[in-house]
Image 1: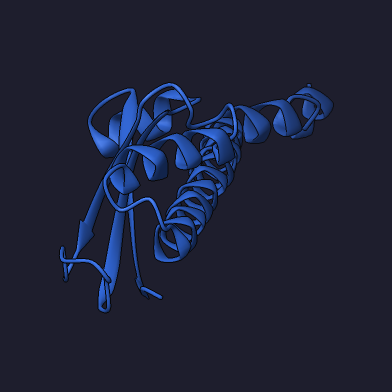
Image 2: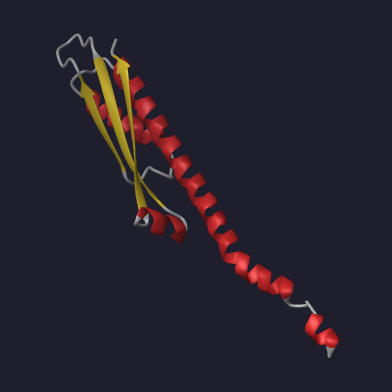
Length: 135
């Protein structure tokens, strides 16, 4: 009878059952953070490439449209579906000597329920803005 009271055979299982949800929560948070961070880097790259393209463009009439096409061509599959681009020139007269600002907004879907709970939805909007000199 004494051996039965002092036996600790199920202790490890109980401890694991207590700590497993916390470990899964941390693992899901790491996965979502990496996914969203990768999408933000892709959004930043799209804005940078768009600003570079717009600053060297000589087709002033179609610069905004062509820049949007360039941004979509640079985007990877992670952010390509819901991507919007806004192009603003400080000087709209030819020759353009000023700045160009390219704002890129993308939407990325979260992977786990942890990010859905924290951010309040299954998608997250990411933005990036880059300004470059024209010319």
